[in-house]
Image (tube, rainbow, N blue to C red; front, side, top):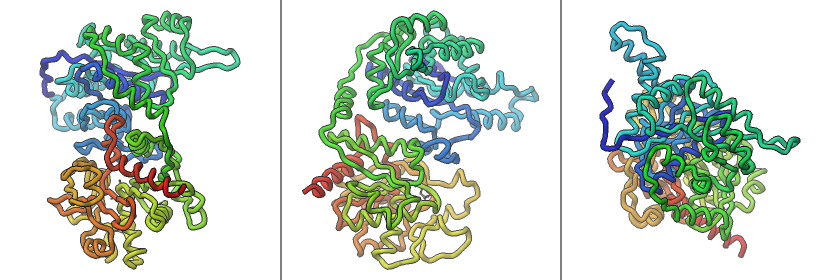
Length: 547
Ligand code: GLN
């Protein structure tokens, strides 16, 4: 194993674990702390350790695991990395998303190569050493590294990660790491009380494996009173001031400010012996003010097939909200199940919607509904934003209904080896031999040249942009000339491979399809230009409709 060099900073590590139940916002807590430390001028990095055995979430169904978040270097990661990038300026890569699957994969490959010289390969020390190595590697060159451990304390598969943290904490020595445990505090209506018992049990579980938290972040619907804090502190051996409330927030972007008001960042600095530099939070405060008191609202339809699990469209949802912030507007997102959209329901479903977005997706199911929504947007001149699959479907809809190619289709819907002349969306020759489904996509950031005079160029106000991809199929250039002639023009190009990245409709107020995923690069403090433009066009459409 490569030795991790000491760097100019003696990196401090903050571990974030979760107890009692899942989905209590561990990721948001970690991301918010990242934001607060950056606001105080510290150089911060942030990573996620996931105890599942998949090597990455790329092959997991969005129904099970929520969205797959793609980093600049093309790693398919957990959606928490999305929170991290939205809340901090950290530049995350595949190194920042560690799964037990990757750890085992590395250790087993080493064993096969004979690296362990005939020794018995075990969870301790081999798996734990590999985990420690990954964590130390990410921390290099930063003052603070935040490390979130996925899952809930008590899960069998999480144990090697917790053991690795235990060892790391003692390797690093006192004052060089902190452990924050995020728990859930239920309110029992009949007793009229907040209950600390689940937190006590969860901390007991941590202690059994040798971990003592320094701070407790208690998720609860009600404020925690002093008595609660004292009692919890006593049972869990922490200082009462280190028991911090995380109440439900009106918007997730308020969480850093709420945790700051609770003093979490100051306590953390104290624990880590770091200088208490004052934070600069004006940007966050201003943004949250707009979110809480917008001066207008706009209704956008998101037509997709994973609408029952909103986590599947997490980054898109957030990017739309960011587009709203830039326009001082709230964005009401109306999730439309494309499977249920047909000629009869469409008018009702898309009533008073002034923007239609068709997101990324895979497979045939729900495609007809999406095509109908695109046609509706095109014909009624409602702002339309097609993302990845959304752009591909916009091309197919255009080919069928405007260019008269009734059999226009995508290679994705045709069984392998079948010849078809109507693939408006096709596979590139080098990708034709799909062997391993997990590894054939165009992934990560690619440069795109914007065509001067186009709407896309106007929105970005830049010649070359870098956007992230996650798809297998591409626009078929054989149709480019015909499309240009009929008005669906290419306004963004990946020049070195001559791939169409953006299509836009000329005779329409705002109709843009992009082959990439702009939602991954939108930030609340720096909303993505295409989402800003889309929401602005939707607000104009709203005005037009009310005239
Ligand atoms: N299914 C399409 C492809 O693989 C689009 C993928 C996506 O929308 N992310 O090309």
